[in-house]
Image (cartoon, rainbow, N blue to C red; front, side):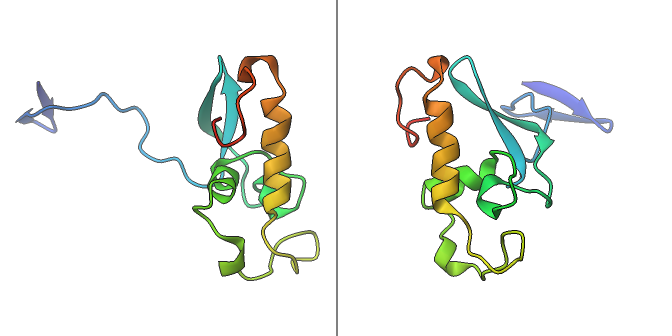
Length: 112
């Protein structure tokens, strides 16, 4: 496990990483039964599905569905009039739609 970075030799176990970040706006795609993240972004507008602006399925939606992001802890600044909470049910519905696809093989939205 030796590599040279900026002229410095490093001897340590390492991974070959091509990207370093996947933010909450990184879009989710189901490919071959697994989710792939990005590189496309849902951006701030329309944003993830849970932003209530007809957005795209994104990492933030997964975090809302899994309970890692709790809508009650966020101000009501979402939706077309920016006066609604994050949309847990909308995010769940987006995952349910994907769970119905053949490559999801009958898994629940949490299992996806």
